[in-house]
Length: 588
Image (cartoon, rainbow, N blue to C red):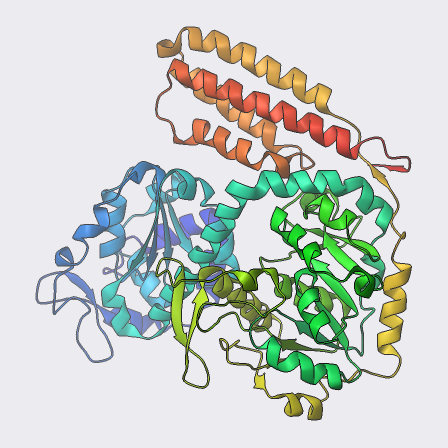
C-alpha cells in the first residue's frame, strides 16, 4: 500500500506497546479498498482524507493554518495534550514535533479507518518507545484510566484539550468525545483538588475512627439484603419542601434513606427515614447537631463513612455502622475483609450505590435537584439553607429545567450528576426522579408523585423492608478486629538510609546529577510499595514524584525539600501504626 508506507511497522509496534488499541483495531470492521481510495493527494499537493461529499478535509484550508497555536504551551515539558481526532496526522505531528519528549500526548480517534490512515503516514515508533504518544481506545473506562495517570501533569504542568477542527466535519462523534473529555477532566480536577487539599484530613479522620469502626460492625452481611425493597433516596434540594409533606401523609411501603444533614429538614415534616448516611469529612458536619432533635433521631441508624470527623460519629444519638470507602486506607488493604464502596463526591450518589449493592429492587430520587433558583441552594432545615448564594460564572452555570425555567447549578453538582448518569449508563437500573424543577438526570425518568405510586416506586415485596432492617440491626458488632503489624521501624531505617546517601551526593551536587535522580526514583518506588500507608502519603508521594519526575537538574535546596518530605512521611507512618496496630484479634 504505497500511500501507507509506515502502517505495517506502526501496527507491529502497537501490538506490544498498546495491546488494547491493537485489539480494538483488529476487531474493527473496515473496507480495505475504501481505505485506499479515501487517502489521496489534494490540490495543495498534500496527503488528505476524502469525505463522503468527495471533498478533502484540507482542501478548503491547508493544515499549516490550523495548528499553529497547538505548539504554544506553558510548561510544555511538564504538561500533556489530549487530541480528539487524528485526521491523517497533521495536528498530531505538529504537537509531537513542537513539544519535548517529556510532554505526554493522548489521542482519541473514534474512526478506525482514519486511525489506520494516520498510522500509515508517519513513523510513530520512536514516540511509542519513549512513551510520549498514547493512542487511546474510544472507551470511557479505558479513557478514565489514562486520565488518572495525568496527576503529575495536573499538579506541575497543564492538560491541553484539543479538538481537531477538520475532523468535526466527519460526524457528531467527535463533538461528543470532546464533551466527554471536558466532563472527565472537570471531574478529575474536582477529584485532584479534593485529594491535594483534603486527603490528609480524610485519611486522618479514618485513622482516628479505625478502632470505633472495628467495634461498630460491618456492612458486609448486607450484600443483597434489600432484594424486593423499593427505596427512596431523599436529597436536600429545594423541591423537598414540596414533596416531604406529601410523603409524610402517605409514605407507602418503601425504605427511606437520606443524609445526616437532611434529618432536621425531614423532622419539620414528620418524615422519618429508616437510616441516614454521613459522608462529608469537614467540620461543618458538626453544625447538624445545632438543629437535630436527638430524641427523634435516636432510633435512626447512622451509616458513616470512616472518613468523617470522629466527633460527628461520637455525638450521634442513635446506632452507628461504618462504611469503608475508596481513596482511604481501605482502598488496598480492606478489600478482602470488608465491603469497600467507591462513594463518589455526593451523599445521594453514595446512597444510590449503596442501595444497589444491597440489592434494592428500585430507587426513587426525591429532592435531588442538583440545582436551584434564586439564592438558596437547599431546603429549609439544612445547614446550607442559611447561606445566600450569588451567581459566580467561574463556579456556576445557568441551565433550563424541564419547565423551561432558568436554574443554576455548580461544577460540583454537575460532576455528581454525571457520575450518577455514568453509573446508570453502564448498568441500567429501575430508578426514577420525583421531579421538582431541577436538572434532568439521564437514565432516571422524571415522574410525578402519583405516577411514582402507580408504578410501584413506593412499594416493596411483602416482608422485604423488615428483613433488611433486621439485617441492618444484626450487622452492628459483626466485624472482627483486624490488626496490622507496625512497620514504622522499617520505614525509619529506610528513609534515614536514603537521607544519608542523598546527603553525600548533594555534597558534590554538580557531579552527581544522574545519581541524585536515580536515588529519588528509588525513594519514590519505596514510598509507593506499601498499600497500608500509601493513601495517607498521597501528598508526600506527589511531592516526591515532583522531585523525581519533573526536575531536569538539582541544587542544594532540593535536599532540604527531600528531608522535609521524609520527615512528614515518618510522622504519618508512626501515626498509622498507633491507630491500626495492637488489635486483639486476627493478624493481617
